[in-house]
Amino acid sequence: CMSLEGAIYSKLTSTAGVTALVSSRVYPVKMPEVPTYPAITYQVVSESSIQRHGTGNGTGRARIQISAWSDSYAQAREVLRAVRAAIDGQVFTADGTTIQMSWKVDGSDLDYTAGARIFGVANDYTIIHS
Image (tube, rainbow, N blue to C red; front, side, top):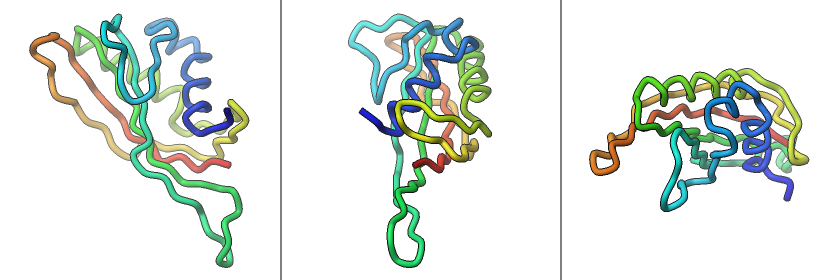
């Protein structure tokens, strides 16, 4: 299907700097029950249509959070840097969706999952798409 989420997935899984670290372990919202690390999750935080003269023009604005997970904090940060190189400031078309503008708006460390000994780090991006 043609979607923003599909475009993000396609971009991440076709970028050598990302796949060198996570292979194809890129998942919407949450990881599988028994994941292999490092891995990436992505989710739409918010989405709206851009209005021009009172009508939608097929262009949307979304905030996407992309998180990197690893049993090593340093490796999680390395994955997130590769993701940023693939997404931040990039213009591309993938999965039938055109990313017209994208920029990092926020970044954070996520809660350390003590039981699993897993580190998570995340960046949020604003993405203009059609």
